[in-house]
Amino acid sequence: MAFQHTRPKKPEIQKSTTPWLRLKEKLAPYPFIAPFFLGFAVFQLLPIAFSLYLSFSQWNGMSAIQFSGLQNFIDMFQDAKFWNALRVTFIITVFCTIVGTVGATTLAVLLEKVEDRLASILRVFFFLPSVTSVVVIGYIWKQLYSSDYGFFNSLLLRLGLPPQNWLTDPKLALPALLLMLIWAGLGWDALIITAGLRSIPDELYDAGKVDGTNGWTEFRYLTLPLLQPTLLFVLVTGVIFLWGIFAQPSVLTGGGPLRQTQTIAMYLYDVGFRYHKFGYASSIAIILSLIMFLSSYLNFRFVKSESEY
Amino acid sequence: MNRRRKILGYSIAGFLLLFAILYLFPYVWMTAMSFKADGEIFSGKVFPENPTLVQYERLFFGYQYGDITLSVPYGTYFKNTIIVTVISLVMVLFFDAMAAYGFAKFNFPGKKVLFWLMIGTMMLPIYATLIPSFWLFSVLKWINTYHSLILPGVVDAYGIFLLKQYMETIPNELLDAAKVDGAGAFRRFWQIVVPLSRPAIGTLAVFRFLFVWNDYLWPLVIIRDDTMYTLTLGIANMQLRQGMVVWGSQMAASVLATLPVLILVLVMQKQFLRGLTAGAFKA
Image 1 (cartoon, helix red, strand yellow):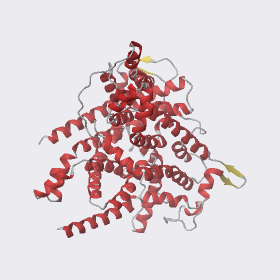
Image 2: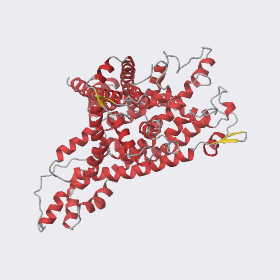
Image 3: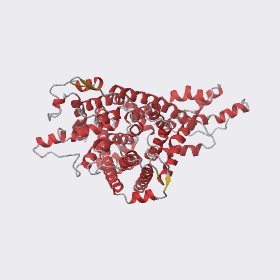
Image 4: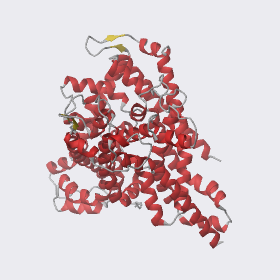
């Protein structure tokens, strides 16, 4: 851990320097930060400004851009496919944040109770999906779910149960996706929570033991409150990630059946790059960004008020 | 009490071990599948009865159908991914370290505003820039190029933040001494700050490697030509090759794409965890 110095502010000593050298030192920091801001201007600021403008326009990428005011947003409000995508993404986000965070916290706490050498091996195991390409993960699970030769169906058959169309049954596709997402996200969250657990000083636990804590009270009144900043980080990054989820569902199900797994980001991609409605796609992008900002803000508020007891 | 604790420890360990084996099953499936011949794929058994390398051979030497050979430019995907990953890693680390040094070791007018502006970009989802960026790159005729894959990723506020946190712990006295000896700003950066920041730079390198190696959405948007595909795009598009049994070779490709990151994580495991503890959530 980084130790904190408290260093008295020194007066700037610049003896024996010519005005030229002094100027050079003064200007020195700018070249170091310039590349970032140059890239920021070209690859982020410019596109964002253009995106905002496009969201109030109609454009197919070829003809002239036509300003159309709020039309895109009115269309979106009446677009059943948009609402469907919003619903699907909302379910994914809420389910995976809650189940994922609870699961990861449990896993991290249990891992701390295991002897170190075994724990570090187990940690790598659980961390594997976090470093595996989402495309690879999607295809493995697609095979596990396959109706012809998949693992889940051969398991069902062996148990004497009827096989299911996991990815083409409108009722089963979303749960199948959720299971894969929980599996894929568990290790990453658990690792970050582990890091948070490690930063809680041992003395606090010792003090707790003197006061007679058992496993549960220790967790509830000591670990959990102190873990709060870490959990906040996991929640906020998780929510942003899940609202924007794209690759996993598009590989596993392609959004089907009947759009039951089509997320906002997938719908945006379709509208923009398949139907070439760049104006409308930009408005969806703006709304998606706003949703992300809003839900991370709500997370901050919620966790803050929770801690004030 | 102590004994009870020990028993509890063992049963937790046993439970986690069992859970881990279940958890890893998809990887077992992937590996087992990649060693099956086409005829065995539908056998309903997890492990191959006659393991074969045919799926791997296909990736590099193509599919044999009688006299016809259909090739998958898998070697090209690998090459593309390596080129993009290496170049973008070098660039990101260099520019991130520079900006981090600028913010950590200097005071200058506008520093606060610029710093928060940079932090603000972390909140920016890729979707907010996706469509205009695509348009910008097509106007520049940069579709299907390496630099279109590399350049946007070089703007990386998260990395700057991580390195800045670390560089602030480097004592200023060290830099002042070098300054008195006549070392300019860049020399102090290159000869003092960068070597001392190696642990943080290492952590960041792992992060960025994983991100670039596995990225899917941006390549999907910007790459249309299959000789420019990265591994993820290549694996995703194997599906589309008609008339071929791709299940096995898709898993073989997945195994080969996963191995480098697996090795990296095993080697860097300790450092990785330490890096996370040091800087990840001090916002």
